[in-house]
Amino acid sequence: CSSDLILAGALIFRADLLVVNHFRGAAEAGVYSVTSQVALMLMLLPGVIATLLFPRVTAEQDQRGELTALVCRHAAFVLFFCCLAAIPVSYLLPLLYGAAFSDVTTQLLILLPGVYLVGLESVLVQHLNSIGLPRAIPLSWIATLIVNIVLVFMFVPRFGARGAAVASTLSYALIFALVAYYFVSTTG
Image 1 (cartoon, rainbow, N blue to C red):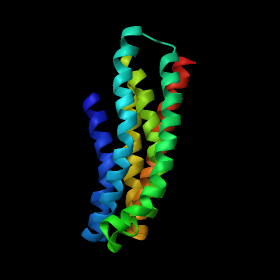
Image 2: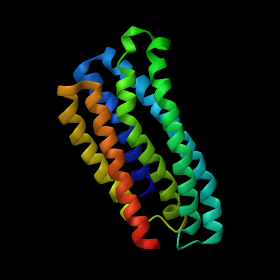
Image 3: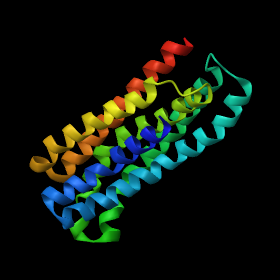
């Protein structure tokens, strides 16, 4: 099950780039690649927080998720400010990469809400991992992957990399909603 989770996550985070390259070509895929790399860098912080949280939650056997909820609130606050800081940075990227990368700003602004939500999901899911990964979580990731692929193939041919960003944000919101629902329903 954990290998399914890893594969589904990798595909959700990278399949959109392959589809952009296929339908819109290398130039637009190159721009989207920069966008997605910045988004992935923003996701590192909650990933680190989640990694640090896992051993503590495992040791404490916090079935009610109180520690995870506290850490998630703090992560939400910090990640919110990281995403806010990314807004002015997004306007600097075309200056750094050149005029051909002018759409990086719009693409990143579209991705930021999804980055925020999937960052929070990465903290919440560590609680579920620590108590024994429930089958519902890999199934949620697989369902999200299917939705993501459908959305990417619907949006990219018409809207290009911006469509990929919308599909990704919607997919990230979906996995957050599924994991948050499961977390709340199991911990109260």
